[in-house]
Image 1 (cartoon, rainbow, N blue to C red):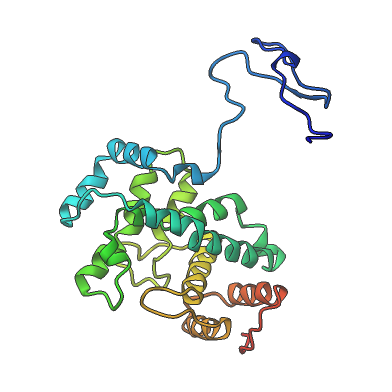
Image 2 (cartoon, rainbow, N blue to C red):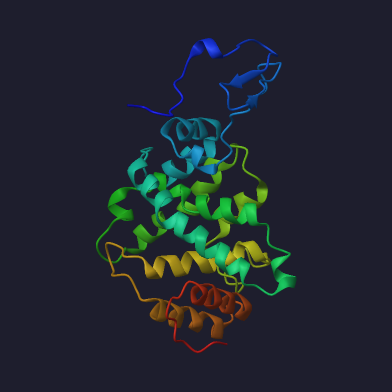
Amino acid sequence: LLVGMEIYNPGQYSVGLGQRIQFNKFGNKIYFGQTQGVDSFKNNSVERLCNEFEIKKMIMQNPEVKKILTSNKMPVRLNMVELRDLMDNHSKDTMNIAVGIAANLPEALKQRVNMKDLKDGAMLHDFGKVLIPPQILNKNGPLTVEEHKIMDLHTELGYQLLKNSGISDEVLNLVRYHHDNFDGTDSVRKNFIPDINLQILNLADKYSALTEKRVYKEAYSPKKALTILYSDVKKGNVHPFLFQALVKSLESQAVQVNVNKC
């Protein structure tokens, strides 16, 4: 019945420290390290952080997380369902859009993009929403001023959660500042100059949010989303080169985007 299928046979394996292990007759050789510190199978994907055990450890390691929650009268309650949904949908969509923008930039700008940091930052940018109450996160209607204040905490919460998890400083900055205004109006960040990675993430996040269906709105068409974002270009909040790169990326995917290019 299983013609041609190789069946696992323990007798065909040689197991032992430092010895070569050969997978049957296929010749694929795997060498194990000589010490317990070597782990050839370590998962380096940022998605490894999206589990309850890791997040609880993050909270224990950084008292600042509980301090933020306590001062804003928020419970220490993990919204894992929402986080997994974000990681599987909005975060991946934002990452793909960001990669498309970076790929279509002029060469001089493209060389300044750190693609790994950009991808990791896009995947983790909404990580802090795991601590935002679901009744605010999924409210079917406009948020109150107080609810907006709670929602806006997700950037700082994401930063504080990930601070001791081995994530690079650049990725931490992408998580912490991806919603910052770049026009100097933020009281804390008046002298802040966002780098190319942060500007790409900011634009990709906006486009993804506009074109997604949310509980409080229908998905916008690419044309409508780009029209809204073009108004940000005219205000000086989005660089024309980034907007053009986004349009080119969408055109290469055969998306109809009849909008005036800058």
